[in-house]
Amino acid sequence: MLLGFEVYWKSLDARPLPSWYDEAKFGIFVHWGVFSVPGFESEWFWWHWQGQQPPDKKCVRYMTENYPPGFSYADFAPQFHAQFFNPEDWADIFQASGAKYVVLTAKHHEGFTNWGSPNSWNWNSVDNGPHRDLVGDLGNAVRNRSLHYGLYNSLYEWFNPLYLSDKKNGFKTQEFVLHKLLPELYNMVVRYKPELIWSDGDWEAPDTYWNSTEFLAWLYNDSPVKDTIVTNDRWGAGCSCHHGGYYNCADKFTPGEVPKHKWEKCTSVDLQSWGYRRNMKIVELMDLPDIIEDLVRTVALGGNYLLNVGPTPEGMIPPLFEERLRGVGAWLDVNGEAIYGSSPWRVQRQNKTDTFWFTSKGSTVYAFMTTKPKRVILTLYAPKTSDNTNVTLLGNPCPLTWFPITADAGLVVALPELPFTPGQAWTLKLDGVL
Image 1: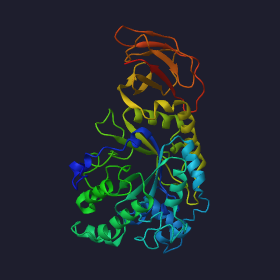
Image 2: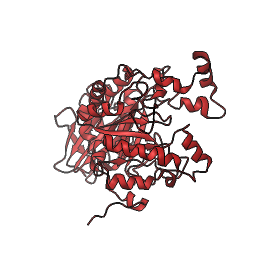
Image 3: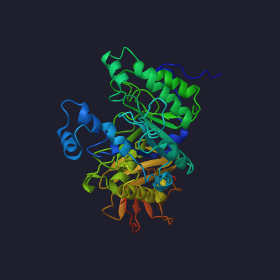
Image 4: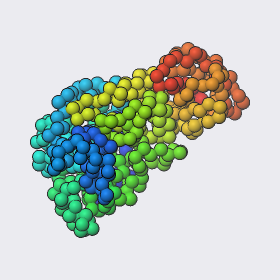
């Protein structure tokens, strides 16, 4: 008889990860909040302006030159109008991207919640700014398209008086945790039933301060999402890459080999920020071939790929971001079978004359060409062929001509003329190989 998961890491870490997550492979991250209004530097603008010592001179100058004396960060909230926010449009874009899950910031480090949290009076999107339940509205649209819905939540809040008091006490008190964080988290889970919680802001205090194991035990045993919920690893100082559901390890984490634990790479189309920047330049954005290569590399090494966009305070996904997302979707329409539900192969990469990344499904191996090959005759050294081996190019059902290199391993493939693809990546499908 299963007694449930107990309130300590060894038990919690033994929980199997719900299968939907590994099968999904690709998700969209959305950083949206009051920080989108100044739209300067990054979503850490408030901290850089008034938290860190000394303050960031660029942020101080930005405020001095553009806002009246005495203008506070809280004064940005009424300007967070989201007047053009149409969750159906967003969900259409996310579906067109080929993503299988979406993670929205329910609350970032600024403490402003994108839903009507009863524990965040007047510092939430229903009482202030949009006067709208952003979390609920997007969740309904996303789920209507059979996409999984997750929520990002920052454990800490830069300037919350309760948190600052606990911090001053060396985290020996838990006023913030007991009266703000945990009631809000429980309420959020019961109300919105997310299938993923992307926790963050944990690093200043140990998991015992955050009561992380108690919360996760409830989440896994008794919550309304106990069978489907997926969590990451940011639950206290030292937890990252050691405890939790899947591992993030660090922003934009890119391992050199297959980790022993399920992991995710989170990265952003805007290389300089997660939140919207008014002054972003096209050279500061990932282009589509780079995104495709990053996705392929991540999946080949057993990870999921979470790609971030930062909407405007008006509620629009910038056209360049939309173009990138739709481009990924167009590529996945042809090559998705090599991504979704795949597993790392025994060889993840070949780097000889040309670079190939590999994934597998049973006796089928997929070889990704993330740059156009220099010649029409390709050599793959690792696959072991048989009389039943068949080689095709995804998007083209015609069998390709191939020859074994030796009786033990390897084959030479004659490529057809490769069709144009904005992602500049193609996939060979090898059936009947080892």
